Length: 201
Image (cartoon, rainbow, N blue to C red; front, side):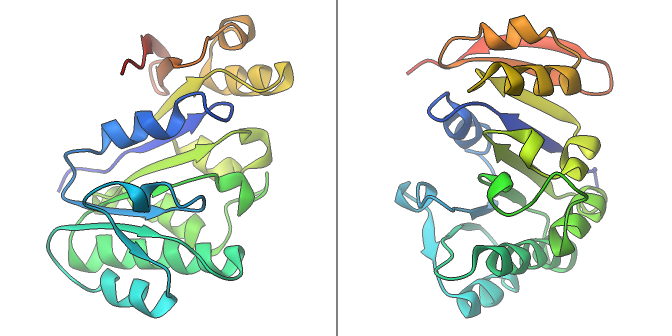
């Protein structure tokens, strides 16, 4: 089984992060999304799940799956459960793709907590692909950035944000700061090779 990949996506609100990831995972058979803003559940073909019991049941089912989990209660506990379900489904059922929206809302700048940390450290060798999305990575966990196989950087909200993510990507802070809406830089973390692109509609 080939290893999975961990892609960290950074950028200001409405810069193109979610659209980029939606297009990147469009052909995946099995997707489970931490849909904190209830965006993915509106996409045709995705099933909204908002009960923890339904999420646990779905994690045990083989076959094609396109789920968007919308937590109705404590988002910290809900995210931990979601992460555990993704790891279980990918390890014991079939490999899948996980998308975590706005990880800074449910982690801190310390080591990745609980099941999310285990998913980041163990999921890739189980063939799980992970897309971790955040507006401000300096407020999100360092485990994700440290384990990332690639970074996708859209325009930053502040210069401080641009400087932080540029330092992690091996790019110039001014290059990040000067990105326009829908422009991005894709960085392979091991080679530091940078590819530029722009989303079109």
